[in-house]
Length: 55
Image 1 (cartoon, rainbow, N blue to C red):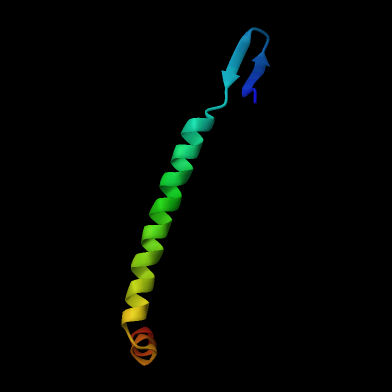
Image 2: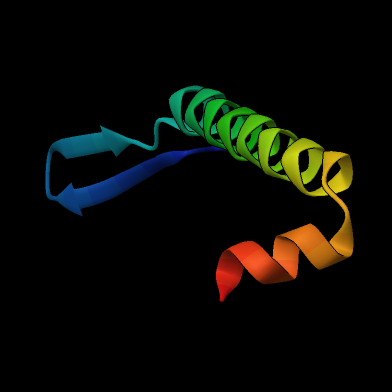
C-alpha cells in the first residue's frame, strides 16, 4: 500500500498511518475504561436507587 501522495510537483506527503492507528487505539481504550467505570456504578446500585438519584 503506497501512502505517499503528490501534493505539489516535487513535494511528497506521507500519510501517518501508524500514528493514526496508535491514536485510534488509545482513544478506544479511554472510551472503554470510561464505559466500564460508568457501568460498574450502575450495576452496583439498584434500579430504584438510580431512578431516585436522577429525580
